[in-house]
Structures are given as C-alpha cells and as structure tokens.
Image 1 (cartoon, helix red, strand yellow):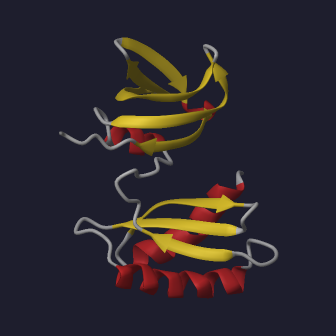
Image 2 (cartoon, rainbow, N blue to C red):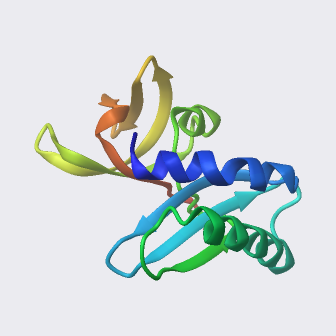
Length: 150
C-alpha cells in the first residue's frame, strides 16, 4: 500500500464526518509538508480549513503515521485542482489537465491536454487532435489546467 493511500484511509472518515469531501493528500518529504485538500459544494472558507486542520492534527498526533516533524496544511483544491483518482478524471471529462508521468510515454513525461474519457485503468486525453491512452498507474501528478476566456 502506498503511504498516501494509508493517510487517506486514516483521514477520510474524519473529513467526511465533518461534512466535507477529502479530495486528496500530498506529502512533500523534502519540505516535510502534509497537504490535505478538502471541498464541499458551496466551496471552502478559511474557517473550514481551520476546523478540519484542528481535527486532523488530533488524529495525526494520536496515530503518528509520519515520523518526525512536519507541517499540516489544509486547503481548498483551488482552480488548478489536483486529481488523485480515476473517479476525478471521470468527473472532469472535457476539462484541460496537466499531467506528469512517472516515466516517458512516446518520449514525453509532461502533457497538457483535454480529458476525453476514462476506460478501465486508462485515461484518454485529446492532445492536438490525437487521442492518447495513458495508463493511470503511470500518472505521477495531475492538475486541472483552467482556461480563461479573453
């Protein structure tokens, strides 16, 4: 089991119990920062982040899943929302996304393309008229890439 998955299992019941969606969890080992992204239909406020941070701090202190010191950050996923699961890709079909792969595919590790579909364990992207099939297991990082009208 990946470390991030274990943190999601630990934190998700707390976040859901407070009425929020746990979008995902990131741990930056170099800066020792645990980022927890939460959401709810009406959006996230600073007070929401503070309340969730307080509850998660207690759980993290008791369970101690990360050895040593680290900083906990709780925030909204924002406009460039991170995508942590195949369900997220399904939810945001038609949107632009930036991907970083764990290893090159067709000579590239980074893509900016439109999410066309999700099939089995693959994400289909439309990149300049070409459909790319990206195995989900190869996706290291993914974020929505907001488009603005001029």
